Image (cartoon, rainbow, N blue to C red; front, side, top):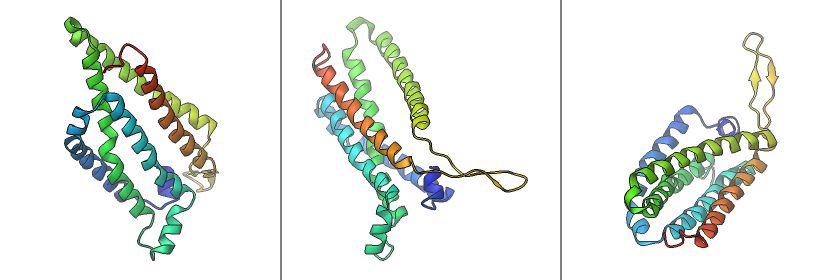
Length: 198
């Protein structure tokens, strides 16, 4: 977000528009894809969402390397950074929260007959642990790939910490690779476990 504000010139209003578009289309996506999720195995749905999410992360990575400048020069400024971000958000948002639905369905499907409520509560707690682990992962990745925003002294106005987005491209690519490999690895592990019929 820092880079989008500093590097691409996105303001708070445009970021709020992206957030609103994302929230609305997420709700629409749950309605549109309900049959798709109901009629296919959970592993297939998660695999599809993983691949789609990886493909839809490419425009942001591309913009770090100047994609928006190239498209703007070809289209007379029409397909600029804001256009790409808006379209990417519109395509990606319906898929974002949908990944939670098959996971919750898998938990319910795998629960022992007489312990469904307890099993569901315990597994839901594990999902909260997974979210905490992802935040720790974010922290450690940010230590490996250092990204800083410009900080100025409030009194003198002098820059105390210069902006440095030079490692942001590597960070984005690493996150995309992890987001692609881990879910597909989990699918393969589940396929060869007792949960393979989920």
